[in-house]
Image 1 (spheres, rainbow, N blue to C red):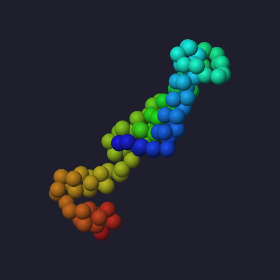
Image 2: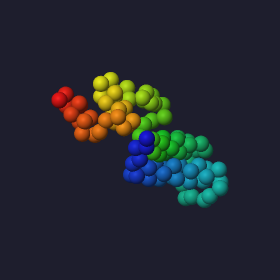
Image 3: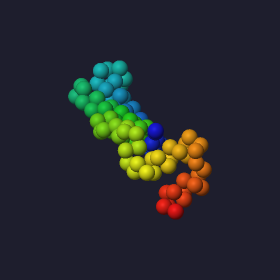
Image 4: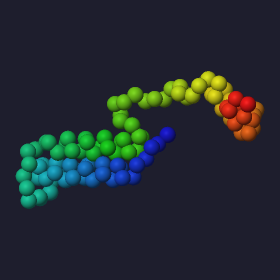
Length: 101
């Protein structure tokens, strides 16, 4: 369900933090030694949030979900897997059927 990448997650958090610090500086909430235009750091925050989302869920929020149930598994293999899950077949029998024996 989750495709978590710790490296991407922390890079995303770093970018979000930098963006929030710059944004807070532009609103006068904190003092930094440089001056930027008022609202452009929100772009950095959005890029960071997208990176965190991708790190946690393994896909972009704008891409297709891909939630179709086992659409990439052939019907014969899907039937064998369902039988194993229900307990109607052992794993060894499933391997033999998958191999076509």
